[in-house]
Image (cartoon, rainbow, N blue to C red; front, side, top):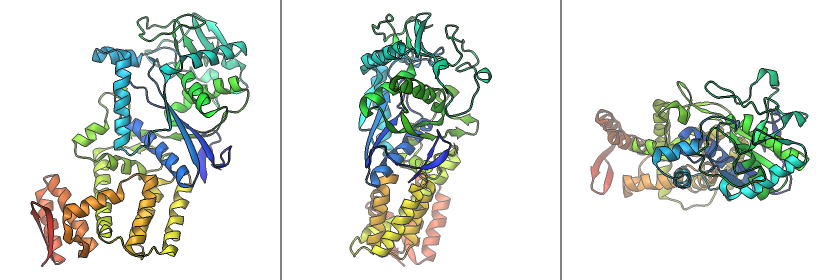
Length: 472
């Protein structure tokens, strides 16, 4: 299996450190608001990666953090405390906010067929571990105290900018318009490991530490949670591309300084979901959630399908028109599968099964190319294989793709009526398109499709039992 490694900037053969087993870490959400669909694109693609690794027979242990500590900007220095702002916005405690939005996040994941990681760790449960590792970094000379805070000293590293060849004089880390630069740092790139002093005096969650009452920086969370649950060596670390710098850069710095050796072998970064005006984010105003998609009549699995039609290392542009196209394509795909579900008997055609399974593995093994994998789904439907073989293949593919192909096809067949078994796939596809048109109240299109169905020799009408199709 070839996997693109953001650290080396090239595809590499994926070889787990321990044969047959994979340790995998995913940066989890900061639970101060609903996840928007841009966030969820990363989790969908990480889910596909995990499921494909399992599909190939590997034993995967996946760990994810939940950031339920009030944090600042991505560099962990100055900015807006998102958890605190969320609590004030909704007149709740920080922990009430964290619980509510953690539950909401996993509800969204369930709707999108995203598997819950094997281990999920709220940051607030690992404070002692953060303090232990920070103390060790100070003892080793990699951290220092200044202005009441504990900072990681990046000047002690042979190389800090591991993902890109930045130069410190060209980059003020974490400085952006309207954000103060931290004057306590020895070096621009240094980052906070523990806060006892910040601009947020009303920070709700604080803990005793050797350096005073305070709270951890953002980056130390993921290093400690990963090392505690997956050991000193990590196979794959996942996250959105915006986490590569500075978050993942800082994770590598502190983890390898603490351990004294290389920490993670493969870095898997998912590119942004963009709108026509740029990257989708909560700070950009109105953002799109799974619930909003549902309110507008889209199945969450349609959004997953939309994401899988593009490669994870390409930016994906979201527009309602693009999502409509994905919805139409998905519904047509289900309509093609629906007639197959009427007769599941028959022997599996092993030669065709192996050929098409090989094509699927070629696609997925080539850096998780889901767009090509979806193409293989269509190749299955166009093949000369019998219904039993096609259904067997689609069922296996869906263990990775998570598109509910057979379940939704069975539902479509049942909704269409019990007489669908002998009806040509072309007619069934038009029937499904007509149902979608009626649902969208596009009655002119529905009438046009009814005429096309009639031209093929079938009559379609609605009854209390569902859509009935009869040969003319």
